[in-house]
Length: 150
Image (cartoon, rainbow, N blue to C red; front, side, top):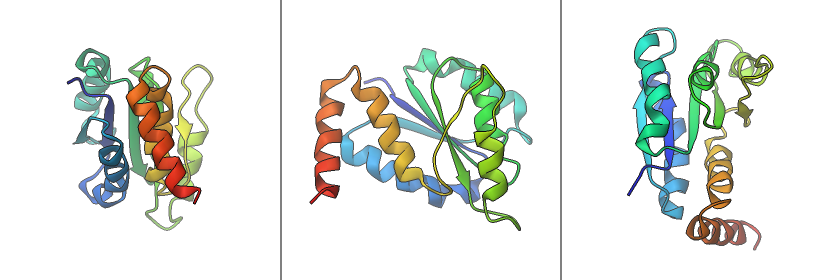
């Protein structure tokens, strides 16, 4: 089974927030890989991971980062895959700086952006993208949404 979603976060402290996406991906039966690699502390490792993601079967990436939040944009610069950025609440601005950093990407390097700490929506958006070509994920997504609409 190939890996459908790549999850990358800038710091181990982001894992608690990112694991909310893991729970949804697990519920929908969507495979994923998860790593910690900072755009600032591990730039070469981060770039290599992003460049090789498609070859590993990844179809969409969820990238979470706090403070300057360069990670989603750096990842997007190194892959043609869709990247969903998750601003992580941290620092004196409690994630607002991260939100602005992720949403304000230059032309040609888009990053879809969800709300601060909203990894649940990142997982649902990843599922929606995957559901375009996978009927089993589409069915799981519809069951998940049905649960929330009751």
